[in-house]
Image: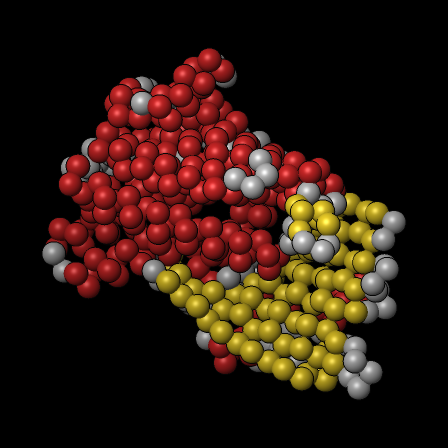
Length: 417
């Protein structure tokens, strides 16, 4: 890594972006080069300083004093946030590349990755301000806004789109980025909480073609990207046809390919998912049940929540989530080999694989409270939380759910491209 070159690029993007973008667009590069020489370092800034803020400095709140995240959990959250940031840049680049013909641009995956990486510069650098009391949030917000401006300036140079279409191209890209953030948050929250980490996520590349190691997480994502490329070609055909409905359908298919791996995925309808919440759990009767399915741009997530209790006031909560179109994110969790374990005098938290399934377990001995969640079929998550005699009781409760039945539905609603 040429650190001086990296600093010069950051300064150029922040202080003179109109002059920097043409130079950046014309430079030869591979995706591996961009990751190793730029993205892996800058993407680490907001997550590292976020850890410093939450676990070392803490957040001051009225009446309660300073709140801090446990260091072990904070490190796990930092590592997980980092690997998702690396993945997110690549996914958004795939979308930018696929959308190029729609806005009069030229498809080029490396240039798309340049676009996203360099546009993120302001947001990543502003993430350092998290540790500044009072105005840190404002600075971070300003960095995000400036990144949108950088994206707008860069698209005509990197993706060769007409200047008059850059605003629309930027708007669609920002929508995709926001949806991606929502899906990451939903999946991570359902699967592993804040105390997870990852291992084995190194980036490798063949020197001649700039490809990622096929066995690495980003190598898996590169193969995933080929599905997006095919969906992008269908979007181009729809664009040429002039049929607005065909264009809308093609855009949804492309989004489905990006987040579903090899096609769009229709999550289970609410009444189908409801059947997996038993009438009783761990000897407690069900007292409340809610089911919902949310969708946007062809992406769907379904969820059922049930509360179980008895006359003594003991309760357990069951959450079953069909990540639907976002199932590829769960697959990515598997590719990354996420595992972690931390323990204190009051309890423990760990993420591990059990029989091929990703499991997250948390237990607070002082409160006799915990949660147990498991990923089923790299698509569904089942989580049981509440007061119990021990984590083993929560694990047994989760196994009362028809996990094999859920696993059998892993391909339900998958529309192959």
